[in-house]
Length: 169
Image 1 (tube, rainbow, N blue to C red):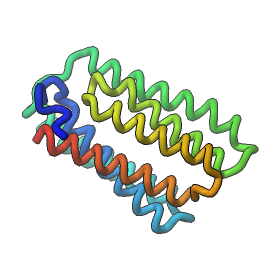
Image 2 (tube, rainbow, N blue to C red; image 1 turned 120 degrees about the vertical axis):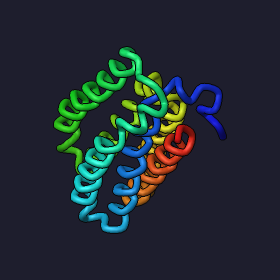
Image 3 (cartoon, helix red, strand yellow; image 1 turned 90 degrees about the horizontal axis):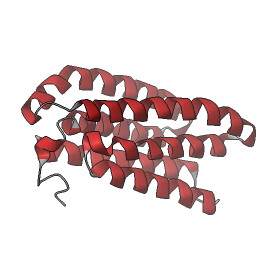
Image 4 (cartoon, one colour; image 1 turned 30 degrees about the vertical axis):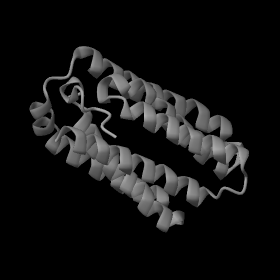
């Protein structure tokens, strides 16, 4: 599926975003293997993703073109909204237990991908919808284990991240 083939230069941030997503997705998957340590694994993976992305983003973006101001604004707004929603809603669901907290976090992260589409391209809409479907399935099906929910989320992020990198580079 060539979601960016028509105009890959329309999304110059896609490859660097893909690198971040792929590394974060891999960390989430690894966290599913050591589920009790998943937050530590995710924190290390997120830090590694941030450093690697910061180091290689300039060269990846330079090959693809210059992002527009609107793309940068959409990206920044999505991240700011994610942070605000996490701060507000985690406190509200905390009394309901670990499952509610994890599903809330994954749901907010899923939704924050949607406004990132103008910056990274259509695959972010797909990622947001698939991650949200994973959360909704977990809400409806209480036998869907947190470990499986977590692993599925990581696999989705790794796959879409790899797609973004492959499409642009």
